[in-house]
Image 1 (cartoon, rainbow, N blue to C red):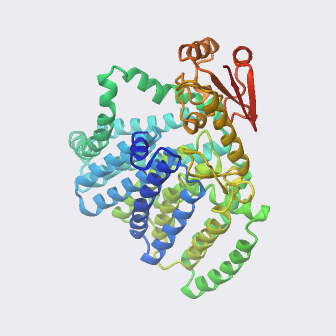
Image 2 (image 1 turned 90 degrees about the vertical axis):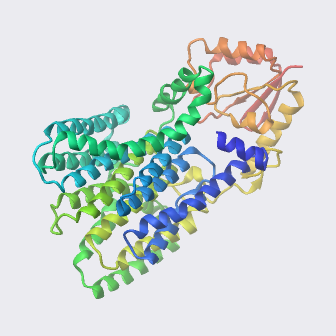
Image 3 (image 1 turned 30 degrees about the horizontal axis):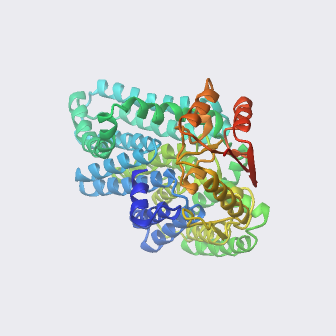
Length: 546
């Protein structure tokens, strides 16, 4: 919010300003993606992976929503931690912590990244402690093992209300598999006394924690000085829990995950093939994918591509855990690579929770690049040779995004190809973006009516249409943006009191609220009686009094 407020101050108060900030951070994020991918594959392959990550993110939805920043800061943090592994410098732990703190300030789900880093640091400490190769430390192992169990329990508690088979596979199984493997590593490999191990873990966690705490403490200072920490706590941790009941969307059916097994099995089988065979298979595969690309707007192809992409994170994490366990013919990877894998797998698995409870296809884009980077690390670990088959798959997903994803309409994304209807400039002072012709007519007519009849700074708009306040340049007499966050008991009285207290002359009803449903009937009746004059602008219904 503060960042976007600064953008309004510098660029002007319009919908374009926060998007310019998003675009600037997006451009800074791309080198970080390239850096992470480049730790595992050639510069050419890393460049292609960066292009795929780029086209599967912001070009599909350029709204400056916080989840984009969670993704960006997660990759920044991963890059810093990989640098820490290479140099041993603790300043990189601080940098990773700052990324975590900023991510939490963008949206509280940044805690998923923080949890993933703590998971990684536990394994990092274990690898450092193993150099001593002394038995003991069962107290440390028991304590840390209990902490890992708590992490799995927290994930299970988070998803329990909507824990279908797909949710268990996508959210719980990856975290449980990785933590189970890590717990076994701690228990089965001697690594020194508990005192030494707690000290070493503290030396790793402390720089990260200090880095994370810095931006958060700066943000908290005004709330502490004004005695508003309680309200902040409720707004950040209590009220968002209502999303579990109102703002929800299910994953595709369980059977759709089977589509992703084909490319995964092909990559696994190809690890033993000679170069000539790989090239031939890649050529045949490339021709088939090219044909699929031509017909990418057809429903079976379009959905098939999405079905193959959506399970990327759980499949990658499970494959990575199998590699880490040494249960494959390849044996366990060397210790440095294992640490890299634990980092990427943990971040992908836990940050994937951003898709819960609203698993709209665009939410996959908030974690897809993390899954892609983890998949690159896994494939590069089991197969160090150049991989033309992997290149063909990356090239296909690049082309699909360019042709059919970036040009599609977000409301149909993942379901069917629908050309983007947002082609009309929103001719409002606070516009600055393109919208559909229907939205253009609706908002321009509604805002004109609001400005013509509002006799002060305040109006009331609802349910679920906070953009009306912004576009009209008016203030909200309540503290509610999305109505399902508001306490139902006594709501009508509170809204009416706020309207009278601020001398509101215009109210706007949203007849198609995306989450909250229709407002209470007694509130509607009271507002209709108080505001007799009307204007209909599509599904926005404007009422006013003289």
